[in-house]
Length: 627
Image 1: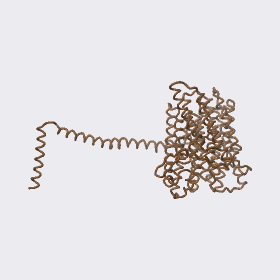
Image 2: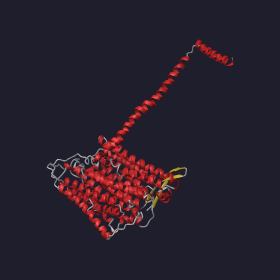
Image 3: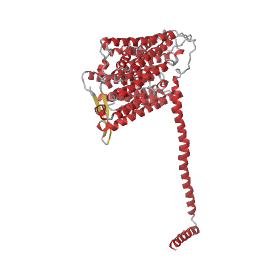
Image 4: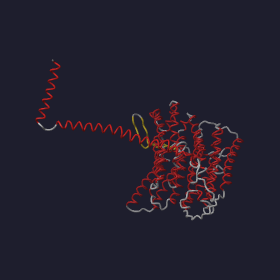
């Protein structure tokens, strides 16, 4: 396979985005273009990128070395050279495969979900730009090029979250996502600047960085590692920069599925894994990352227990699952974290798309306590949602069990027992709140008759495909204890040097404990919410329901204080000091000009008088000085 085609994995959706955007402008200003044309171009681009990704995968599997394509020099200043380059190694191609495949399924789903929308062409223009940005992020051969894709996904999330911009709340949600991510991106930039300063002249692609990063002083490496992770906190919605993700549900449901499963939020996990050579040198920072992941997982799971919006429950579940991924990569088990990224992509896309099907059927109702009794009315959606819910709850043999259990095993084997305990307890909470959603939505006794809207095949077909992934993708990481081979671990071959010393008997016990924790969560949820009677009053209040008032605290500490600071700068500093000083000087020069202007009066007698006064004054000065 020619390395040249690496660029086309990114260029195909990028060019498609430009074409779709141009066609949309033509359609609204000149002549209407049928939506089928937009559909064809929109769906074709991720399909082509996926096929190219498969071809590169086959090449690597057959023993080819890493593919590198550098079409031109992007930046060259005083010995610093940055090439516009693409890297097709095992990690990047692994990411490409599930990004494009899951993205393709979401594209097909979106054609049905967005049918009849006035901004149909514009939506898919943004959608394909989102895919292109994420692909550039993972295929970049240097962190500078990665940052272009990093910012691209941030821009696209802003455009898509606020897609229905006539609604003020959607605009606020889009702004919030954009601003919070800019905070994280500042940290990412600081990390890159330090790294570039110490290593830049030796080369700044990943190969050079891996070779020379050890020359950087350890305390500087610590700063770099933490700063880069601050960027990951923003993109992957971890404490304290998680607050944008629940509000991002304001966008259309396909956007939520794409953000949570194939793009954006996985960028932070990928970044830490890509910089594994750096984080291996600073294990204390890795441990910090693992603890942030553990507390994010627990915190988000607790909040999800009390939410009533079906999409926000799933949003908090994503924050929680991302926490598991950071536990793994923080402890140095990068393949394990990426294995969970892989399985999560299937069951989380399925959950969001299933939730979207429910929302469409109920005419855009999102409160689970206004649903109920949908098992017989939506049998296909019920089945796939059950598979996805069992998977995220860690129940074998569904995919989430294998990846989540391996993370808990690695934490235990690494003697991080607090992280293990938090992860285990979070697993029980996950099973509880996810089956709370499931039982209330599909089994609740709602006495209100729903007038169902039909669901098209383009929505149903991707659900079936993803259901197979949610059910069986975990077998690609079958552990040794079951006599299997972890294909994900073998493919990525990202080993930090940490040995795993756990007896099979201990591993069986840990698995049993994990499954029991999930089953206990399901049991509690069953006892409380199975056949839930909607006549009961829902308590939509309390600290947990209000998300521990974190948004209000942030609003008080940061938003209001910055508003007051901006008012102070505007009124006191700008108007009172700067403007007043400038205007005083200006008025002074004007008045001085007026005085001088009076002297330029074109009166000969006055000029003679001024000359006489001047000469007399000068003569008097000389007489006094010489006399």
